[in-house]
Image 1: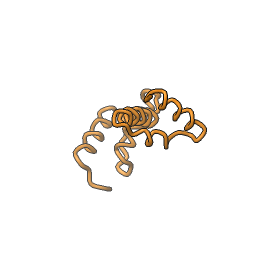
Image 2 (image 1 turned 180 degrees about the horizontal axis):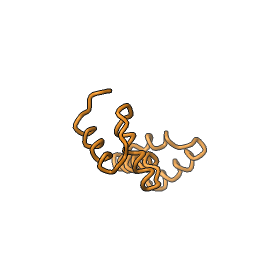
Image 3 (image 1 turned 60 degrees about the vertical axis):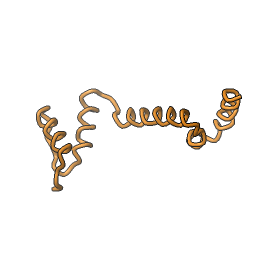
Length: 90
């Protein structure tokens, strides 16, 4: 059993109060994600990934770092992306 930090203890307390058995050998964060997925029927990691992607794209656009976005695109989409940027920036 590993030591628990303050956030870990808060998550474990929440899960216990929600009536969820807490496995001391499993990360409390993973248990919390599983709880939300079971309780609300959503894919938390998918939502977090989409949210991160949207924020990263906004940040890249604000800072003019189009290369970081371009590198994430499929090769088939890069020419269309380049054309779109040329139209926007010209």
